[in-house]
Image 1 (cartoon, rainbow, N blue to C red):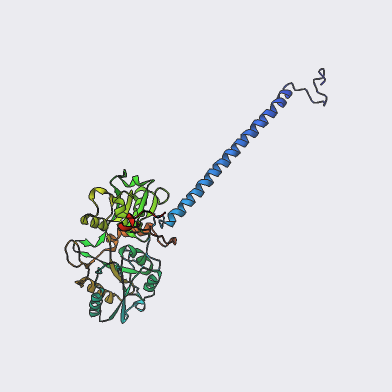
Image 2: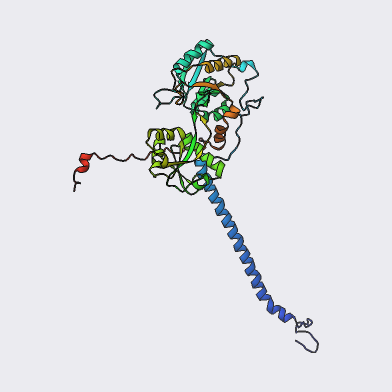
Length: 389
């Protein structure tokens, strides 16, 4: 640098601050690089956490879907149907050519294989329908299978009696029109979902089920499974295998006794099964505590296909409501046979539709569960013998 001229060797004017800036440039560069690195690491961390949360949520959604619980959506009639009066049921076709008026009416009905006496005397009912309609009536069992549903849609089944909890799907997708439920003048014959706990349990409300194992009966059960997980989702926001766990007892009887013995802490039951054990003295009332009870779920509803000739449909309805059902199962409280009574699908099936809106058993095909082995019974004579060496 030439001090006299005030310039450095390159000929540039001398700047007394230049040297200081040059000395501070490197630390600032390092600081900025560190800050950028820290921001990049933080951003990557946020991205990773978000990715992990999304993966965890997807995994949870798969678990929930496996149990059949779906986002609640108000299900409606398929687009091919109309509903002029807003009753949620399909109107008959306006084109007379699309109406059914067969010489033989096919009646498909629910059958309880375990019952000594069926809810309805189906043979007598068929004879009653034949007399009222002047047509041949052929009865067959209704299993609510894909084939049964397809047969209704194809016009191969004309009158259907099925469990009310299965009705909404058939109503919305194939035009089933339920008009009555089995019951008495006091109301529909059915059962209530109860969620009960062992008397020793600290669980007092539905919210307290969080983190515990809910014992259900079988995946096909309504009160023992479907209704319970829907109620927990609706009332508490809890989801199976995410907020609480699901186990299966494979029977109402196992669930009731397991609860009373303290083997299960909380269980989904049918109120009639629980009350039956209490009345018989098989279970003490002090051993079980109910923390939730639903409204009634009608056990049996009857109806016809939407495209049945309206005049014929009216005769079928009248005959069902007039049927005495003397050979059918008796109502426990009155001792008289139950009869078909008029129902309002909009009002009387509200809880059933709520279950259907939030649950789809067809969502995933679950593997068949195997019931736990019954406890081994050792004969006293063998038990008294010394163990073999």
